[in-house]
Length: 277
View 1 (spheres, one colour):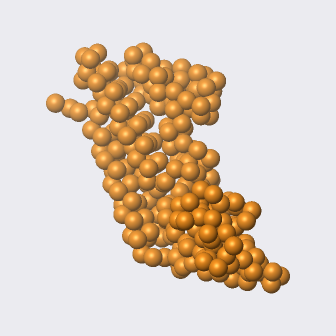
View 2 (spheres, one colour):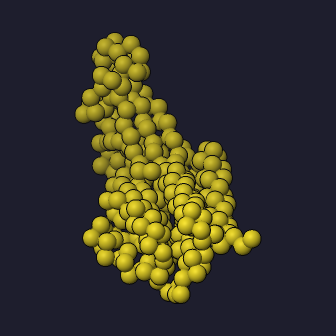
């Protein structure tokens, strides 16, 4: 028996292969102690600059692996449309594209044209996916990543969060006020340089210096008697699309993978229910 959906399934499996590869490389990078906590004196000599300095950049091929994954996932959606058309013995396979649009208004206009050669039940299924910004934003972001590839050679991927814990030394006047680091964090005043200070090694963050591969967390007065304990949790994010900037890259890609897999399964099930396959 011919499996019209085998191509879509194979492409989804290939996307999973790339996502797994990306995850392995990110884990290898983040587990390799690629950063150092440093304190430099500001150029004006009046402040200490607390930084996280990375010894090396992310692997150059990570964006390429990302492109391979999202390209496979976007292709699998269109392959589902083709499979449905062939299974239903449609007279034309010209307008069978899976619809994704920038907003709801454009989505509603797009569906009738790009899907008109598909059975009405499949058109309804694709319409329910709401693949637009403000609807199913996982699908919208997937499409945006694919379109970005056409205009940029790489999608910047930045290495993730950093936390600086600031604790008064024993001889500091505030030291007796807090018994534990946790209490210090809760009762701290950022203006007084006590507590937790976080940063993100994003290319769009003002504290990130790509030429030096370092992240500025905090400026302090050298006369303050405090201890500093930096704890960096490296996570790779995808830059360029707002809704992805705060979601780890692998997490975002796995959501896309699961969403596409569910749509492919639903399309195949609908075709079987209709007696097409």
